Amino acid sequence: MSSGSTAIGGTGAKADAFSMWVAQFIGKEVRVLDYYEAQGQALATHLAWLRSKGYR
Image (cartoon, rainbow, N blue to C red; front, top):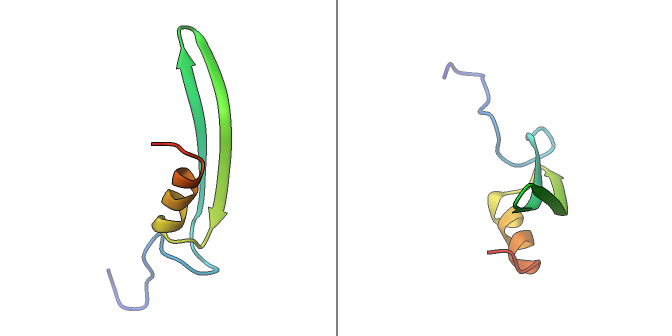
């Protein structure tokens, strides 16, 4: 990486957006259970959301 460039991802106002769909696949049926999106949050924040919903 050259000086002055920025890494992809990270936290803060210029960070990448993140979204996640929670789905359940039963035979040929797809059930969308939940949706989450955030920007500028650390990975721990996304994992905390999953845990708060009871997803493992």
